[in-house]
Amino acid sequence: MRQIVLDTETTGLSAEGGDRIIELGCVELYARKLTGNNLHFYFNPERDSHEDALKVHGISNEFLRDKPKFAELTEEILDYLSDAELIIHNAAFDIGFLNKELERVGKKPLKAYVSNVIDTLAMAKEMFPGKRNSLDALCDRLEVDNSGRTLHGALLDAELLADVYINMTRGQEALLIDAGDAQTDASGVLVQVDLSGFVLPVISANEQEMAAHEEVLTQMDKSSGGKTIWRQLAAAH
Image (cartoon, rainbow, N blue to C red; front, side, top):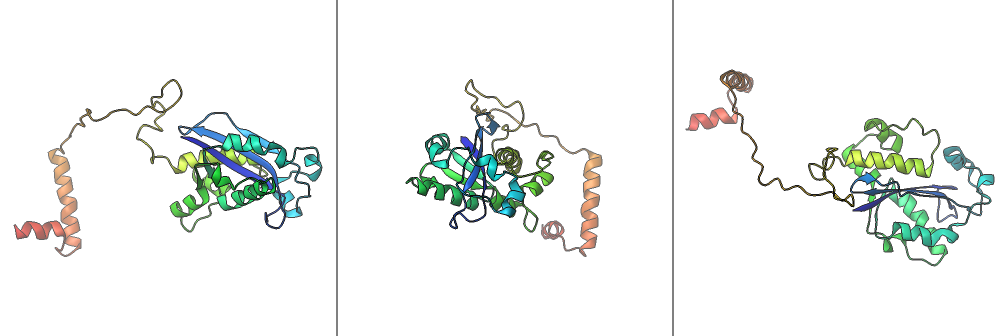
């Protein structure tokens, strides 16, 4: 499956209020591996960034003056994103801005061009309830190196989010997908391995292990006042 990890930087927080996208960063994953086929643009937003936004991304208004407008690159962006599954942290924010930019040039909303959107913030809230789930917090929790992130940048953040997403979903794919030596065909697509003929060996506990296990059960039974289910079932028979 082709997936695109996407991030934007903007002039402010309100797409409906007239704020614009100033940077788009996209990182491509195929079969959960980075391909290097990334997309990165700066845009002239035709307005200045709010002071608070400047403190976050550090992209000056002067730097953006000679950059292309979003409308000039819309077709290239949509071609790149076409039919891919998008992975975005706090997806509603970025999609809201992208939809507004598409609306300005007479295009349909983003969902018309992509196959699906995964919100890693929603995933993180479900996996780590009650904890901070910003990108920096997730990098720390999942041991993703973000030491180079002093300011927000769309491409850098997309690269970090790709690592975070792979770590968050580790174990949800096929057993061999993250083994490092998973088999792939010439095109890089993961090859499914038939394990139906593989027989797992059964190793029985020895006498010492059985005695230790019985001792643990006895202690648990004493702690419960003889009310453990296995003792009651044994007595019934």
